Length: 295
Image 1 (cartoon, rainbow, N blue to C red):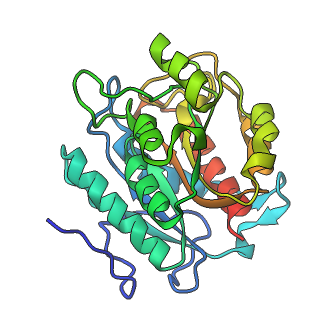
Image 2: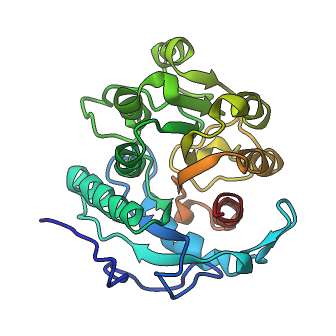
């Protein structure tokens, strides 16, 4: 099946429920487009991330539109919420192709893509599209896990392999990894030798590399499990020892100076967190990303 996006008809997606707070109904006027990637076909522990995009939208309605971190309001920008891409259940290869085609169409329409996952493998489709549009792309990877395996239990398409695929595509010297605290010994050794690798922390090591990223096109992929599960338990593979929200918001203010050409937030599994704190935190990160990266 071939999936295509018609920019003249900006509702090609299976959609129901709320849109992200403050979203415009005018696709043509939008500077950015939010899209969901409801896939968790390869998760290795607790499933449910395919429910993340819809719930992030729903809880966003409880946020204020003003950010005191950035002194900016959502009313100052225009973004469109296209709903979720219809992905074929259990078929990661076709799902990734649809994501790639959709994000490519957003670039053709001159929109900043803002993706909601979904397991982390979905980022592979979006980053492929970004790398095709921007050959000198850099990728900032914020996560608890290295995601640098060639395969996971024999499967090359896995949420544990996504960043290795990115490294193979654009070169590991263009990949910047922050907050990592879980992986194999081999993955940690490989990262230290090949990527820009800053385990355990986010804000300060990120600030240190801003000069070398200045002016370069940057795609940011953010796994919610970079947070300590004390503050964000609703994720498939929680990992203790993570960051907390103030550091994350500080990092976003630093990244405001970058030329961000794509952003995604992945691995929110709302049914695991009945307190809704994970989903609320995710929505707030998306709000901050919109205000920081939409010019």
